[in-house]
Image 1 (cartoon, rainbow, N blue to C red):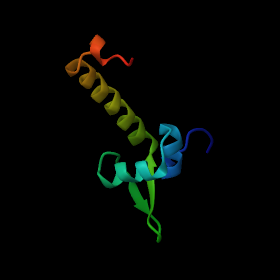
Image 2: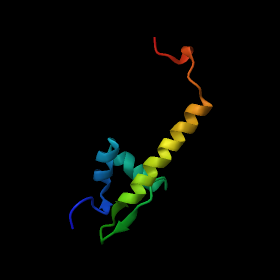
Image 3: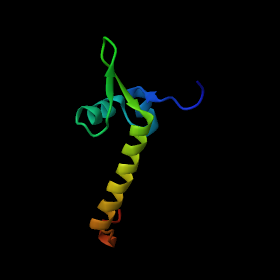
Image 4: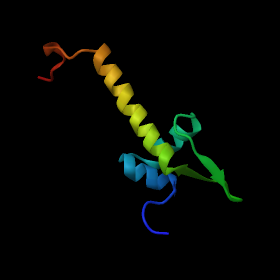
Length: 78
């Protein structure tokens, strides 16, 4: 079975999002990023489609934020 894996580890997700595994774990535990727990040690896995949905939701959230918080010159760094 070649190509994109169906499930990612939290470390894999962290690499995709360019963040830490701890941040991804927090997203999962807060319920922001759907995941499943598998195996006797309860290892977390995130389905590739759920990760993509999360990313798309974040784009929408960022767009909404920009719309409600317009950029003005006083916001520009010195």
